[in-house]
Length: 237
Image 1 (tube, rainbow, N blue to C red):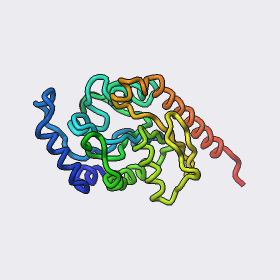
Image 2: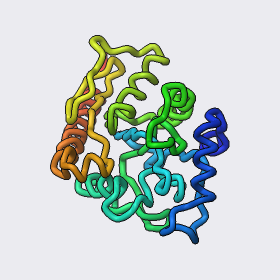
Image 3: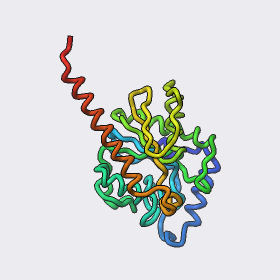
Image 4: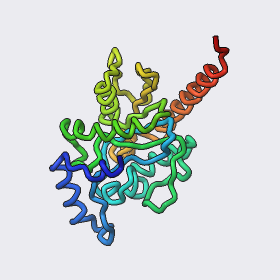
């Protein structure tokens, strides 16, 4: 699965852009060797929480090869990881490079699109082209009970994936920050504003707002575990 993602060339526009960014580089990273390839998901293979972002940042994950990693101190990676750390899903509150020791506990982070798109705006066709990669990762994450969609693109990508599997919620869940939606497959889907600098620097998304999302995820996971325990302990006839 990892090899299939990394070697993907379904979107010529994205591949060309990622490779060009990797050649030209940003001045602060001129000594770095950029990953400049599609970026697989990252986290705990036994995750019960799945987080779906938009796409790699041109000088973040496109440089480091790990989602939400390397986009600078206080960037989206640090903002997300600090929230996951406070909620007990990450062992450190930062995400700077592959050797930083970051591990996720009970959580897995994927993306709607695996290549950095120009201006952070993938096309609908590019999102569709990437759905098989998300599908493969979701199929391997058999314990997932709660999904957090970071931004409308990540939120809608998961609904689009379920629809491909014949799982359609009625009415269709509407993206809204911290809103929880029950899905027909028994999972819960939570919307969350994307931790982009545009959102965090303007106050549209604050640390307390993101904490609210992961507190809800924790509570929902606790209820799911309790329900499983009650079911397992129920007398069999």
